[in-house]
Image 1 (tube, rainbow, N blue to C red):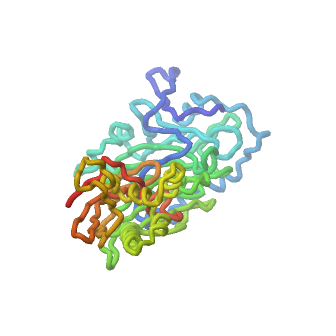
Image 2 (image 1 turned 90 degrees about the vertical axis):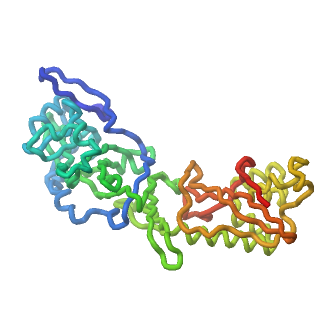
Image 3 (image 1 turned 180 degrees about the horizontal axis):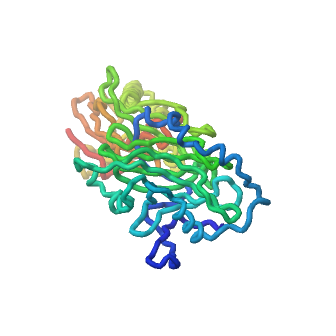
Length: 423
């Protein structure tokens, strides 16, 4: 069967009239860079549900999927016709009006796509309408309906369509979306189907992770998205595999509010806790070290410890001196050789006669804005000189995309229009 984009299948009054449509509910992408959140206790292989999740595994493994056993596959129209007849009450396929949502994938690598259909259990077929299931306001109604969700996978083998496995997704009130993507960039395997639901606290993603030649998942992963935690899904170490970077808010003795970061790495079968670090304590230590190196005159050490290596190398290629690097990366450009724009700074060297440097104490995670380099924040600090004059410049601090690399935090050159002064 030729691979299809995820589509919807429409039942019309005339059963002989069937059409395919693209859907905004199902998204097909090679990789997913979504931001999600979750409690650590919820992000694991759902061992308790494996007996249900893999209930048809023996049946699947005994099926002959060799190329010699395959006849010409049926068209998707015919397959969906037969799936409709196979659905057993009270199973209801999720629909957009009369359009069944489905996606296709060659799970067992036999050259023929299987078909996945999302459904709920309900005695009323109207409950399976997308418009109703995705109505966010239903979360806050006293008598909201909660439905058992499932994903059925059907074969298209030797002209026979049969249900291979039913995957239980738990009970939920409000449906958000269904997506498919690969964990390995540029390859179809391992393959993920993510079914996403709204909760009062945010959202939750249910990942079903497949690997050839199994038709049932090798792993299941829950990624809640709440105020207390957030996950970023992307390849942070450029090995081609998606990583999960989990941010969790909590309390730490002697620190107060802390944000803990866990790197969840794919080990070939499941995501494991690979490394852990934190933000608030490490950022305070980073700023403290900058202060100590500055006041002790160890400027070369300061540059290599705190300046972004890529930006530093670019400035050095342009012939910038050590003093010029310090001025740009510490947000002091507007205070140096102002050329009369501000008379008090004419011939003033902001790196000389420094008596103290005061950074604010970080009490919570300050990183909310993100670009391709990582999260960043512009932080004001105070420089006090021996004559009593003080300046309040800004530094641009990045927490890098991979917070487990050589540098978790770096200083980057500060755009002049973001710098401020005060006496």
